[in-house]
Amino acid sequence: MAIRFVTGNEGKVREAREYLEGLEPVEQIEYDYTEIQSDSLGEIAAHGAREAFEELGSDEPVLVDDAGLFVDALGGFPGPYSAYVEDTVGVERLWQLASEEDNRRARFKTVLAYADETGIETFEGTVAGTLVAPRGEGGFGYDPIFEYNGQTMAEMSTEEKNAISHRGRALAAFVEWYADREA
Ligand SMILES: O=c1[nH]c(=O)c2ncn([C@@H]3O[C@H](COP(=O)(O)OP(=O)(O)OP(=O)(O)O)[C@@H](O)[C@H]3O)c2[nH]1
Ligand SMILES: [Mg+2]
Image (cartoon, rainbow, N blue to C red; front, top):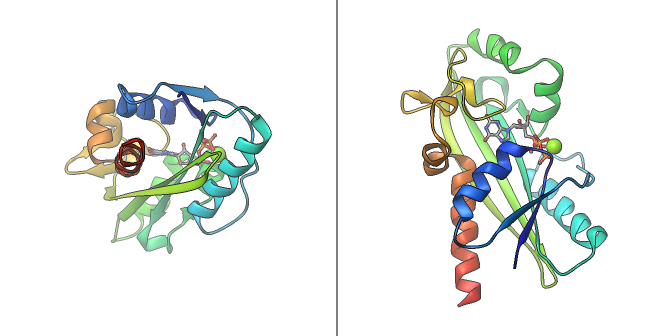
């Protein structure tokens, strides 16, 4: 059965489609679910998936992805507020802020929430990296400033990014659960 990926972010859809190819088709739905204010990406994603599944109708399962960049030297900022910070100050200014720090370590985290008629499951993925001056044309969001193993995520192909990224890891956990459940 097709999975309805509820997001306005085409980059997320591209990565999920690539990863889930051969498992299930992924359909993008632009439904504006409530993003609750919380420190927990898991709570935000689960709440969104529950609301979207109830409000959209039909039995087709839904998937919601809530993601954030956590900068160590900034106490985890912008974390759950990453979309707001990208839209307001922007990626370049966040890099300027981080570049004043000696410690440039950061983590990217995604929680996927999957909802169907039996309930909700969440899957988490994290990647640790280093913030750098922007490089690369691929990816989206903060990818140009997030370096892993010498490459920014914007310098990687979708497949390469999925192999190491927070979203790829969350998708791996999802696929493992999904395959077991179908068996
Ligand atoms: O460098 C990045 N690599 C990624 O892999 C990635 N995934 C998300 N983001 C950014 O982090 C915020 C998440 O906010 P977010 O989860 O609310 O997403 P969003 O608002 O873009 O879409 P939606 O799914 O909510 O519709 C937004 O600024 C996204 O651009 C990423 N940046
Ligand atoms: Mg959002």
